[in-house]
Length: 355
Length: 248
Image 1 (cartoon, rainbow over the protein chains, first blue to last red):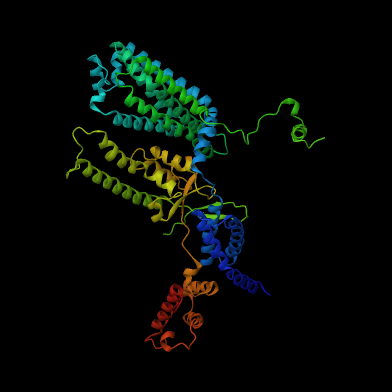
Image 2 (cartoon, each protein chain N blue to C red):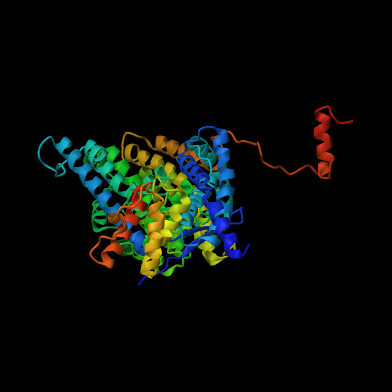
């Protein structure tokens, strides 16, 4: 049998399997939509995948420009995508995120958080010093309306609830804060410089406005307004800045095969922290809309709310709010057990089946 | 000019690579424009209906002193439709949106699988960068300059856009045709212009005769046609009908 005849026979044999291909393609499509008849139906996809791969390899060689190849390429790609899709259970994914992943990200980002906080505090102090020393510089940081209001001896926050309802105020504030927070993270793409700019600008503005209000005897009032929501809001600013700094550092000093891979890993990893930031900013927005502008709340109540919410933030970021699962985690062995076979013998003895 | 699209070649445990054609800036822009129109229409529709209900008269203008309901019922949902359209639909539709579906593209990971929710959220958060300075300037330039035609958000999420595989089903080659005849028919139609007229006529009659139990009448063979060219065209038409309907 010459080669051409053999190829013809192979082609005919391959095409006789078209019903199997159709069944495999149909199953891959069905399972991709999450409709499995039973466990064996789902498990059959692994066999289908091998079948399609084997036949596709032959069809690519024997019938490169045919519709059979186009069909098999599509079916194989679909089977590949279906087979490699991870199971997703929303409740469990959220629990894992807040219980395990976010605390791990916070631990990983600890140096970045320290640096971002240091930069933020330094810029607050710099802004305060600048405006305290040269009051005219407030024009760089605040709007003319705000300056005029403070010069009249009033805070711009006074009577704000008469103009805007609390719910609307909360929504506006939290939207603005979330956008700033996301920008601080994304701006890390500019080798961290964008994040540095956002952190620095916000720090300078805060310090400058505090200095300006203090010069007009309104510093205490501003503190009274900020303390309830500001503890968490400013901390979240530093957290999102830290996430952006990690993205920038991945581009400056890649830790993986190339910059793009480092960037991808840092962005996906640090991005998880942004979910916690959005949750915390929602709470901050509610406090800023309902508590901070409301004159009926005394200072001690505001400090209490600010402190409790800040502790809540720490608990959320450390994973203390959810019971930690120890299943599947590896703990270092005590030195006495750190010899081959010792730990295994101990476990067997505890179960009464050793010696 | 037919510009070949780059392929994403994914290693597989079977040893046979998965080949996925990558969508370029054109397909991406087409999908984006469709999505933009859809979300703009939804945004306007919600605003109009909600504003009419809120105002209780034929007026779309915001009230002089709006209360919380104006924002909660009219403004926020409309804004949410516009700004969360991509993020929500990409998660709900497993890496697709209506625009991407119409353009025949979908989001995949670099291993050819479906992207995770985290990856989809990340690529949408980075739209803040991709939209700079105007009209997706950064994103458009990035898709033109990068080998895999990805924007910054895709780089961050490790995703890219691939064309949907063509909807070829072996059954669509003709319900009554077996796969072997369907392949011969497809190849014959593909090579029709290159074949000698006499040869292709013989081949066509051979294929057509398999699907007729009775002797072929002259009209079927095209022998009564006025010219050889008409006979040739008649045979091709019958072959195409056979390919589409399963009967000549």
